[in-house]
Length: 341
Image 1 (cartoon, rainbow, N blue to C red):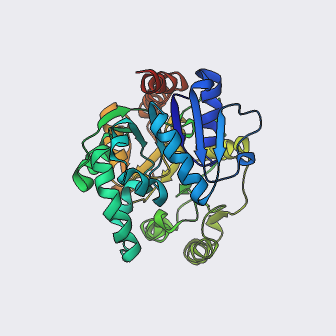
Image 2 (tube, rainbow, N blue to C red; image 1 turned 90 degrees about the vertical axis):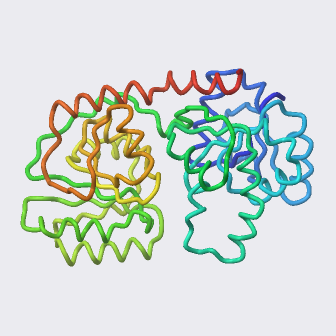
Image 3 (cartoon, rainbow, N blue to C red; image 1 turned 180 degrees about the vertical axis):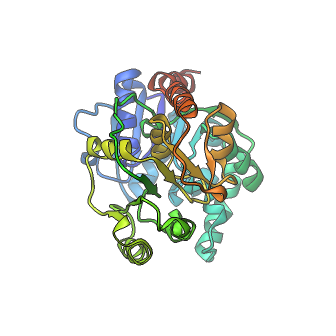
């Protein structure tokens, strides 16, 4: 076993390991998780070990010390953070796949004793981790600023959710302007602020779609109440889970998408929309904004909201750039450099 992955079977990781099995030598990879092995996709032949409590800790000691590289799929697990803290010799061969929430936990408003305890161990671990993996340079800069991170940055698309595929989705003619707000029923979307921004346009021919099929149900109900009060039937909450093909068909009907996250979030959704040539508004003080600007993708500052459709030139330019930068081939190349370099 050459490369140890500390990962749980989640939305991002399942297709990631299916791709690893297809594109590289799976015999060189090993997954250690708390979740039972049966939760991973059927047909995934990469070696896996699942345990809890003391047996998991012992497995970590054994496999982490014998591995050539350790891939941390997010830095969430307090067990992992503490074990790395007490085995600092492991950190130089660790590769932290930065998810976002694990980094932005630094900005948490809930700084109780658990937060302070976690960061007591987390800060020195991040400071000495040898490798930082993300496609967002701004997140690396924040890791260096907040935690004193010194590791090498590896540019990588990371997960298949960030890969843009030429879906061939056709934009169907429709009247008015279709607007998507946010991507989930999570308060980090700040839907109520978006609804306030849209209030001056309530008399126009618009339809406001809010994907709320997963997340906090109570929060979703509060968004629906506010949306209906302000916009009536023009507000259309999406509360049922949609299969991928159906969701892509929905995105094909979107004219403008508005994301009001105060940190890196919903990137798979945003990348897909930009690849489809849609007009995307976001905050200009978050790390994805500078990344898109650097690669020449046109995004719009939410502070200057206008309900004007995307210019054809920028729509085509964005599609071409997204397809190039966030391609499967590029991601596989980047991962091979990490695994084999």
